[in-house]
Image 1 (spheres, one colour):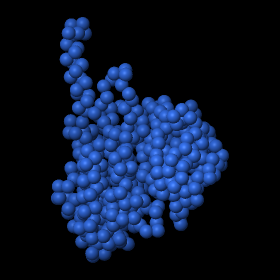
Image 2 (image 1 turned 90 degrees about the horizontal axis):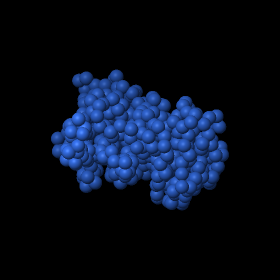
Image 3 (image 1 turned 180 degrees about the horizontal axis):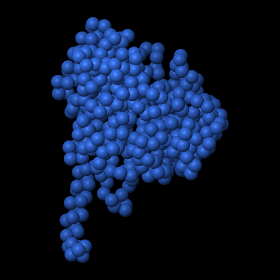
Length: 418
């Protein structure tokens, strides 16, 4: 049969290559370069002291190893890690780093620790304001698994670019423990430091990544710690359960973040969403779609509806100019919370009406309707309320992920099911 078809292999090969290209998949040629996609990332902020947190990013570290615990949305056969000095005011010296599959707590699965190299060297200096990827290492990573990214710094570092609110326990040890399998030398720390991205060469067809741009409701909400119950995590599970080509998921949420303005004197909430797109969204490997859910903190600071709408429209325009799709998410209810007032309620209604009906976005996901109390669209459903009437709980974030039409993330003929 194969011999009988040999005369048609040329046209078939051309057709196959064109089909793969149309799906965004690399052809299976032996000479093809690995096709990378981001599997995990977190949006960084400047190192500063947070009054209620013992994260040491504000003061810095000397002769310490950070072991970051991160959730891989898709699996792969090779890994590279992105380290960041995005908000540093001086070069940052990295002495040693590794990536491994987590066993439990700070312990790695034996045989999975991979020392990271940077242009072939064990140590590297990251210039102020820059980020860099490690050299690739072979490591079998399962989708929805947990990795340990360990970074040793001789220091003193000064303030460390970090992600402060993680809903995840991370670890800190004296000396160089980067390649230690056992985690007995490590104590606890709440923040992710130095690492802000992990890319993989996927082991199943992954056509790109979707980036969730948001505030605390995206970042951590009031979800259970060490459980990966943020709504982007639930979205990753839905996509992983689908058949055919899929997407990885990036959480670009920042607790307390605003669309329009920084929060004066509190740099740990990050720079405004309109100003962080290039680094936090557009630079993610393989990004193709953005889901935007921001604005409740602006409303809490009495932003007007026209100003907030202008900011959201600016984000949409920047995203389209970058050649990406953007899905607008309606702002979830906050009735009964500390930010509620009649004026703010009116702003919320006006902004959500614009998100739903303006046509600014390529599609809309109605997070507000998905989480609202029966008969009261202004308040969270009690089953989804974490208790502060503002942040959804685990069930609420799962409902948010379930509200997303997966066909809006992928072309219709590639849409996963689940």
